[in-house]
Length: 452
Image (cartoon, rainbow, N blue to C red; front, side, top):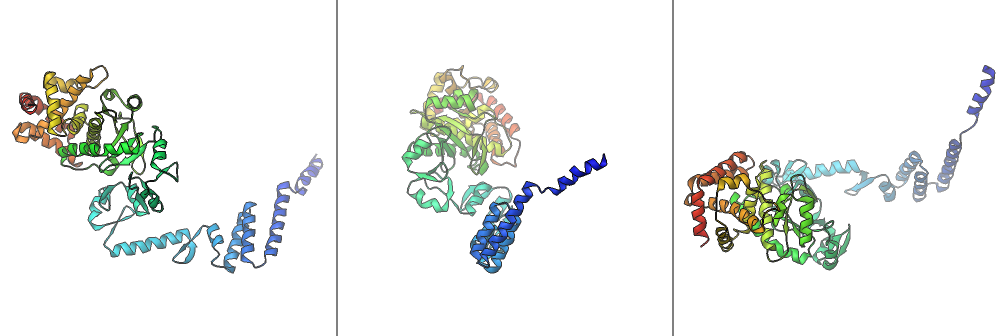
């Protein structure tokens, strides 16, 4: 039996596999090509390229090394090997990166800059950077934005989005990037951004605006949205949120679109003309991250009011997020109402008269216990509830001219949200509600006087 098995086994070792034969032929072809190229660097490089296509990687690298001995500045070979030029010399990319880091460190250290989290920061901005607040030429930015701006990105002069500096001339000609590196005029860009899958993203002074409306129409919302932000911010010492929680407002261009937003990313509060995306809903913004935006109905004469309200909502949510707090709906919409209904005294008085016509202030204890915005309520009832939320904050602004206990509670609430380190937001909100209930008659009298 043993003798019978030996013959087939021996035969297996005597037969050369097909792949080995093919490899031998490739090696023979390679030697022929190398011989023909002789000492010509360009021709040898072509041989190396051929070797690479035949998956003879070791041979390709060997031949490229030989090319560089013949011509140390052979660009194509260096690039094929992944080398880069640094100060006129070719070297491995990692080596060049280390040399550049040393050079940058020396330059910035000499200027007094300090390295924070891998970036060189101006002396006056070091403490803020260590606290996670990044600035660039006076603008508060996210870390990702800071890196992008330091590595050659610039803001589009019309939209504020980050673009490569090489495209700045195009941007100044009022051209806009769509679908990658394709640049088009405003009319074509409007068409590209007219659906909810690819909306415009435009930066105002304080907020990010997202909309399918034409750019010219979006620009009309910049002022009211920034006004709403500024009015709400007055309650919290005019302190901006961190850049990662930059207030963001989605402006629906049609009532159908607003309804769709309410269905997909809203909750019961979307029955009002402006709402905050529900807790688990988020949108992802370039160089910022996941954001819980406010949404408003941008149609009709009330569009600007709704936009201001959304700005107040988004601002309050952003500050609460920075402070690690969760605001009740009445307080969120209180900031929204301050931004929209109390943006100026003329509007405040007008809505105050309507509030009185529906019965005025009423029981604040019941108000706090039952506050809810939903589709079962009449539109006027929704406005009544929202206005009253703003009225409480407006009365709190009166200070000791209104009620000393409520004023103290207002200050505590402001401090808890204005300073992330202060803490105690839940306690401050409960204290404010208790003080408001105790001052109910004073708030009612204030409305009577204010609405005249």
